[in-house]
Length: 183
Image 1 (cartoon, helix red, strand yellow):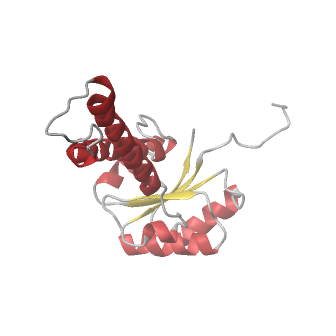
Image 2 (tube, rainbow, N blue to C red):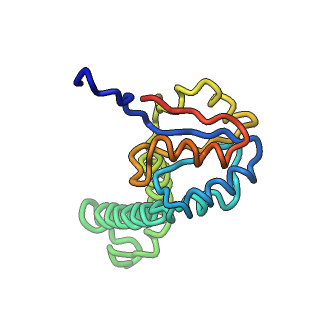
């Protein structure tokens, strides 16, 4: 860094604190309309419409679960077929070795098991969990996000982000403090 450079160090973003869920929802809608796209909101409970206000698209979790279920059903059928027709074929009552109605319980259980595992693992991956550290934890009042306060953070990597303009924007939207979130 040059001696004459008076710029401040980079930050993760700017965060505003709100005392009501409705004010957070209105601020998120206003920020999205203003062109901010890289932002997130934190609340002690789910707020209906907040994800849409932040511009979040539908999740891919359903497709992940569907793929897991199809894979589980396929593996379950192949497992039952291999055991019944290839590895240990038994002629019981003249039934064919590939008697698929007998495979239904195994296929069903494997489908449910694989879908459940893919749902849990997909949720963890899509949410970026486990995440023992996040820059918003550096704001001391953020501990109230799990009790009775609401926060919205506009990230510095947002194309619309300008340190002063974003701070002013959030100060106008919030009735409380606005914080710079350091890395």
